[in-house]
Structure formats: structure tokens, C-alpha cells
Image 1 (cartoon, helix red, strand yellow):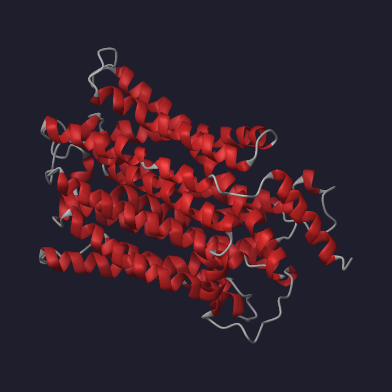
Image 2 (tube, helix red, strand yellow; image 1 turned 90 degrees about the horizontal axis):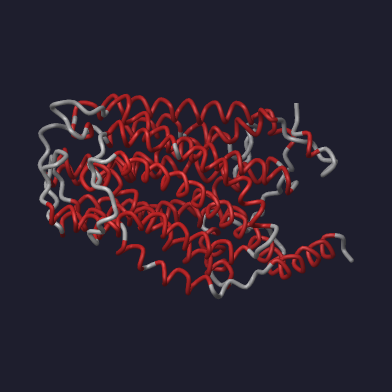
Length: 486
């Protein structure tokens, strides 16, 4: 069974629905790991284990530095691999068990460790989780580019991948709250239950292994049909660094990369503060928070229609800037209303507060998916421009830079979030309703208006993005002429 609307697009071998699904399933593991880091990791180490927010952030900054080295190396090594199982599959399968084991150990430090010992434990296993994720994720992304060269099939493949990645992150949050961190008389919020983190890490560690292995087995039948890429003897495992340097010489790439870096960092900081804001600023229960996540799913799927409508009418730069402004508004208006003491805004005892949060979750998921989809499309356009400049395709370089950017913002977001919690003296083991009002107000300020202000710098960076729809069409014509030898 194949995607019927592809039949008139290309005479090349078409990917089946199952292959597209299997590929997308693999991306769920990245979404699960990201959600576990953003939502639960800082809370666990700062509130339960007793490591300061600043030290927690420092440990993750160390992991970030390691990523800066391992990401381009992983891309170059998998590009040069030549086995009977394909270039990517051995790395994808081989990383699955180490990823699950290090993920479990990350959330289960020994009882007798001091704060320094727990800091070192966190730093060590955060590094190992990220290394094993790199060995899986970059080859998996590169595999997507190799499965088909048809633009429509690629769009379908990566669209399914993005949706399943987002669903993986949502499932970690929702199932985490419902299955492992339910509110009780003893633990309010449920995330204060230390004993739940061990089964939580086992459950999702095993789930990640299953996702990765199923994805690898499901796509393995495509290996014989992939284009055979000759190995360039002049390219070694260090080549990726030079190619990344060249990419940063491209104005369009610089504009998108640094814009995306700031926006993703703001999103990461918001994700770090999310459980604190939910439990202490809005005084939701863990069950309320899990209920909120359900409203993200229709927002994500609605974006499929919205993206198509926007793309047919506006340049991508306009779509991204407009969507970013809308996302900042959606993310901040309720917090600003509460901080300002607006009389018309309901208090936390009102059901209207939960209804407002549900509405914001829906529109936040919709607009956020528009941003992700359009940003990835801009990177694909940049790949075409670099191909025209250099005469070679460098998807691996773009993917490694993109992957590093998201991991970097995740680590920096955790670090800045931890420092912020220390600055406002947020208490450890805090139950809902016990945090001083002044601290709660400062928490709201740090989670909304402060990071939102810095989007101004992101917009200034993106104003230099040069690839309009007209320019991209000119690049495609030039590439077609070159490839046909005209």
C-alpha cells in the first residue's frame, strides 16, 4: 500500500505507508528524551535530590560541550560507514540499549552521595545519554534523506516524523503524570514522590528501545533500494567540522540558525519552568496538567491545514516572524494578566483558569508546529543554496547543526532555569500552596515576560534571511540546469 497522491509525482520507487510509519516511530525516542529532560530532570535534581539549580544547570552545560564535538563526528562517521546492513542501521540499533541504560541511571543516583557526588553523577550520565542519543539520532535523520529523493515523499516522511516526535514528548508528560506522579495526600504535586522515578525511567527507557528497534527493522527492507553513495577518500571523521564552518559562512543559514537558537532557548526555559508554574503559579494538580496535554494533539494536527494555507500566501520569513509573535502572545497574556493583578482575570479556584490554560495549550501546539515545520523547510532551502555554491549535498552537516542547536538550547534552558530558581530562592520539596506569594510572582515573571522580551533580538536576526520564494525558484532552476549538464 502506498500514498496514492504520490503516483503522479515521481516514477521512482515509492515508500509504503508502513515504511513512513516505521521511520517516524524512531523519532519518538528523541521526543521522549527531550520531554524527560525539560519537564522532569531539573525538578527531580533540584526538588528531590537536593542539587542546587545552578549546579544542575552546570552539569548539563558540560554535556552540551561534549555534544559540540560528538555531533559532527557522528555525522561524518555514519556518512563513511559501509556495511552489509547499510550506513545508518548499525548505529541506530547499536545505540538503543546504551540509551535506555544511561537514561535509567540518570534518574537513579545512589542514596549516599553528597551534593557534589550527585552533581558529578548528573554530569556523567547526562553526557552519556546525549552521546548515545547522538549515535542514534543523527544517523536516523540522515536515513530519512536517503530513503527517497522525491520532494513530496520527503515532505510526507518528515511530517510523519515530526508528528510522532511531538507525540513521544506528549506521552512522556501525560503518562508520567497519570501513571507515576499522581497527586496524593502525601505528595502534592505528585512529582515529589521520589520512589516513582525508578519505574518512570524503566518504563520510558524500554519504550525508547522498542521504538528504535521497530523503526530500524521496519526500514531495513529499504536498504537494498537506496542509492549507493561512493565513499570520498579525502573525507574523514573530522571533515564535518570544516563543512559546518562553511555552512556558517552562508547568510541564510546563519540567520535561521541563530534565530532558531534564541526561540528554542526561550521555549526550553519555558519547558523547565512549566511544572513549577503549573503546580505553584496556577496551583493545578498533576491530573490537571496531564489533562492539559490532551489539548495539544488537535493543535498539532490542525497545523497541517494551517501550514499549507500560510505557505501558499506568504514567504517563509513572514510566516516564522508572525507565528513567533503569536506564540509569545499566547504564552504570556494570562501570566501578565495575573502578575498585573487584573480584576477581570479569574483566581486559581475558578474552573475558568483551567479552561484558559486548555485554550492556550491548543493554540501553542498549533503555532509551535507551524514554526517547526516552516523552520525545517527553510533549512531544506538552504541545503539547495549550499549545493549550488559547492556542488555537493550536505544534508548531514545541516542535520548535525540542527540537532546540536536543539540539544544546546535544551541544556542552556535547564541551566538558566536552574539559576533562575536559585535567584528567587525557590524552596525544595515545595507542596502546592506553600510557596511564598513573592516567590510565586517572581516565578511568573521569569517564566513569561522576561524570556519573551528577548524574542526582539531573534526577529532582528531573521530580517537578514535572503531566500524568498522567488529566489528559491531561481535556485531550483539553476540546479536543474546544472544537473542536466545544460
